Image (cartoon, rainbow, N blue to C red; front, side, top):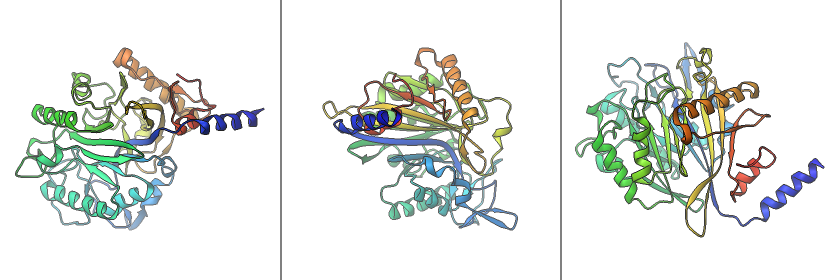
Amino acid sequence: MGKFKIVSTLILIFSLNAHADVVLTMGGDVNFNRNRQAAHPDGVVYGTTVTPWKSFTSQLRPLINGDINFANIETVVSSTNDLQNEEKKFAFKSHPNAIRHLIGMGFNLFNISNNHTYDYGFIGMGQTVFEMETLKSEFPNMVYDGVGSRSQVLKPKVFDVNGIRFAFASLSIGEPRFRATTEKIGMLLIRDDRDYKELVEAFARTQADYKILSIHFGTEGKVTLEEGQKDRFEYAVKYGGVQLIIGHHPHVIRPVEKWADRLIYYSLGNYLMVGSADITKKADPNTDWGMFSRLYLEKDPATGTVKVDAIEVIPLTNTHGRTAPMTADKAGGRIDGLNKLSAMQLGNYAMRFDIDPMTGRGIFCDSEMTSIRAKAMCAGQLSLK
């Protein structure tokens, strides 16, 4: 009986007319080195030992199976070890081979706009852009955004995947002197009304099927939204046509919002922050994990609109070193906590996930999906919503 159900499901799935579909995976903050540590081409240095990149990513690798795989690179990228760091508590510099390793795993969409972008000043920012451009020459399908001249960062990056056209851009907190101008490279700042308004206007003018905005913002360690954050983030949705906001920076998870057919992840938390604090020891179960999410997108051939067919949320642990999916017994509790956190802060706009009893992951499945991969993921898991 069980085998018959599986075969019947597969026949149903593959008999459907295939629409353009894309699977997008995302996690939050990534850094491949310790505070003020010299960058090494082969891995992370601990005393006299070099630990290779793959040691940190081996349990993460199976998750990176999307057509688009996003990460926020929270570090300067440079092979040069004679850069002068800024007077900051933390200064991170990772070797470009670390990013090359991520690309080899399947990562292909990067944000480089955050409060660690300028850990080594303007020279470090320039080095990061140089290294990312070098990597892009090796891997043409890789897309990154976040640092450049004002005209560059005010123009969302547009790219096509599986018949869907995407637009991507970034905003961040940061020191005003590192704001992008016509004379010098820099970032767009989320707290600067002119920067935000002009980027939203640029999104509105951009021809794309699905628009993604990366925002680095929020008080570290705080799971509750900042005063006015909801309205500020929704501004991009209302006036720029942004369909997905990917939030990061607090190093803890924050609520997920479903605003009409748009999604706002207010913070994904940590993804792979080598050398950061061990958050697994925190007592609050809302602050001891990182959020990995997988979106199943489909484009309606008749209308050209893109919608979310299904979502997975997988809690991550050991994000300070060897990131891994959380065990099922613990993961389910974290998804339950996320649901309550979202409901408490967002009310009717809260995104609610069902909990898969076998894995503990959070799942949302839309009843009108036609994406083959979404149906394959949802089949036999949970009732459709």
